[in-house]
Image (cartoon, rainbow, N blue to C red):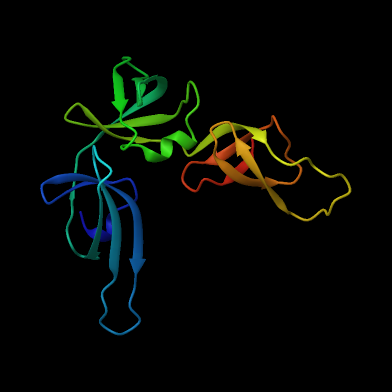
Length: 187
């Protein structure tokens, strides 16, 4: 696979280790004959080791063949997260280092996740695009306040803080993007 085809979430091998791409930045030079460069933030599977890698658009990367299995959050086993396969109830255990962003979106019975499996080992977890979380603390709405689209901070049930419109109140369910961590509407 060429570097310009690589997307966030892709799993590759580099230096005989398996990495997941968590961020992609594209840099195009302004001069003639310049070659587009891609900068990748790689995280080694199974650890929290980070590697920054720069490649030209035509450079080759070795994509790992993955199996995506639909899974739902089941329970905590110590500090580890245990998800169950939706079809055959196979448990997939993830260490916190494998899924550092999970704590911000994890609620009991979280659906829409995918376990990424290589050689029958869970390597990564793909979260749904949006999750529904309850607001536990936000300043009250002031009637008669400006009708503009102002926002205010809101603390969610997982501890994540997001900016929400002024009219949102405590106890409401809101949709939050797992990619950007931003408010995505009422649930």
